[in-house]
Amino acid sequence: MLQGAAAGSGLAGAGLLGFPAIAQSNRPVFTHGVQSGDVTTNSGIIWARADRPSRLLVEVATSDSFASAQRLRGPAAIDGNDFTAKMDLTGLPAGQDIFYRLQWQDLADVNLTSEPIIGRFRTGPGSKRDISFVWTGDTCGQGWGINLDWGGMRCYETMRNNRPDFFIHSGDTIYADNPLEAEKTQPDGTIWKNVMIEEKAKVAETLAEFRGNYKYNLMDENVKRFNAEVPMLAQWDDHEVVNNWYPGEMLISDDRYKVKSASLLASRANKAFLEYMPIRQHPSDRERIYRKIPYGPMLDIFFLDLRSYRGPNSANNQPVRSRDTDFLGPNQLRWLKRELLASKATWKIIASDMPLGLIVRDGETAFENGANGNGPVLGREHDIADLLRFIKHNDIKQTVFFTADVHYTAAHYYDPSKAQFRDFDPFWEFVSGPVHAGSFGPGQMDDTFGPQVVFSKDPAGERNLPPSSELQFFGHVKIDGETEAMTVTLKDLNDKALYTVTLEPASA
Image 1 (cartoon, rainbow, N blue to C red):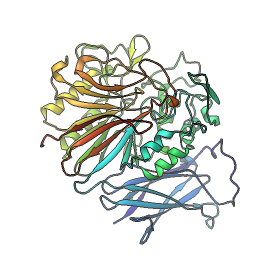
Image 2 (cartoon, one colour):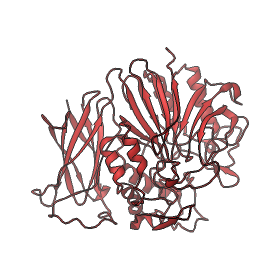
Image 3 (spheres, rainbow, N blue to C red):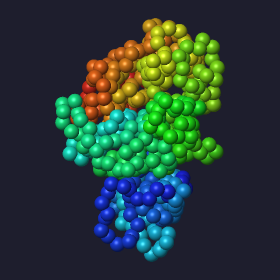
Image 4 (cartoon, one colour):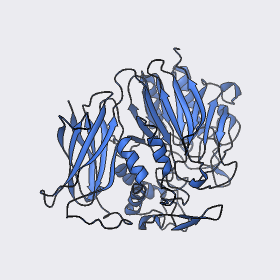
């Protein structure tokens, strides 16, 4: 039976800066479109934001005619969550297109309601059928914002045209630490013109400024159109807070910040992330981002959080495991092992916000990733080695890693015969992004777990190329409902297939 449960509601910063006033009556309005996310076989989160204190009125149906629609009383959007509201639609039929029609009811005058707005998503299948999804990361970074002359964040429209069942956003959903300027010079000397709002003119420190970064991305028409049709399964990385952050870090030398505590910034950033992402929050740990999304008998997705529980960025060369070498942290690692062991799905996707074998530095002497240079398992690599060993010793098959972070696209095959640490089964890792940010790469590989670069498309060492360079990337995945084979295709902004590989399940 279809049910609805409020997953959060609220309000705080007032309307969206940068938009002209809309001439209409005093009815409430939807300020940033609609979103859905964390879709399972029988549920899905819906999201919206109002311009004032309002209650969400919801109709849910299995056709766009809304025949026999069920009407639900949604949550109130008030100041505590910046006028945002989320609702968990439960008891949905499996493998079904779900249409939702929303209205706001003004809480100051309940006779006033907004114009309706419509969104859709598809629930996970109850039996074996074709599944497709896209993934990427890195939205609105390195000073490249919404340029209306270029067409906005065009890669979102390219992904929408692939008609995926869902979208994995692998992190850097915003760039809270990358302010925008009205104009930015491109390598060819032409000018990139950014749409501007107040909150994007400086680094985010206050809760309102973090919220403003999400509002900015939702101004883009490509993004809004995409969100209304494709459910998002999101995780975070570093730029939702500040580049390369870790708990306890103090930003002493960064003069842009008056707030020096990365932990304080992260707390505000976490609240804004959970307000603006259509994510299903944990019932007892409301700040938790890592979670499992079951999507039918062929697919389970495990979302990691490699930021919130790590030790400090360092030389990352500790020979013995300690709290300073934490990457996932003990609780998250135990959770992941337990859920992988219990999974009956054909494919177990681990959505990681960072690649495993690519070296990502934090300054001259520290590392912010697990990879730390060729050699034996050291530092944060202890967590990765533990996980890979567990997967092998428990005979957990069809485990594949999907990630972003490094601003180019690549396919990596991790081969124990070419590794320093060899107690694991071979596996694939696929990297994609940016969806709308500066392009970088390629990165340097670390041989600890034997990654082999099977394919890479990157700027060949040039740094921060704009979206107009068309080195913007996403990946497309199809799981065949009959054979259960997984086909991964790395694509570019223009939907050109750059590399394709088909992975067969072990049973085949």
